[in-house]
Image (cartoon, helix red, strand yellow):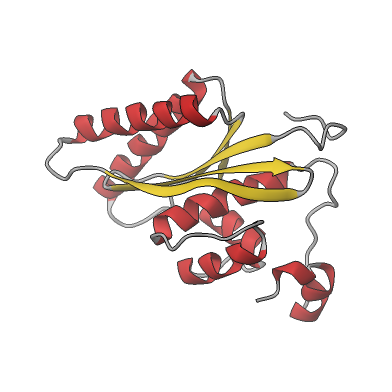
Length: 190
């Protein structure tokens, strides 16, 4: 973990929104308290690949991305529990392969629930994907390109990890109303 005393050292975080057809990824660089996007995109996995081929593609592509950008940490969205068991198994495998790619490259890996990610970015755990995407420009230094929601979900995951692991920052606080939240977080107001 980056020492709280060394806030001027660049810190890179890879955020991943796992999927077997579309995988979102983002890498942010943080110097001090200002996160900036280095790359934000999706990996479209060819539909004609069998499931094992898709998993191999995820591993290979993420490993190459990690080698190229040299992040120190990886944050990944945990699968949500749905009704379709087969989809859950496939998504869990994609997540496992993504984690293995990070660990094989020496990254520290953290996992966050979709609710935790939404809460960190919007202040509401039940926000939808478009609300999450709309809040990101208020948090990130610079501009965010127009990208699919899978990519902005990956960016939100990296931002959540930055907020959660920023040891020198104030602890996460509960709010009873929006006015108190906005007062403590003026930069997150849309």
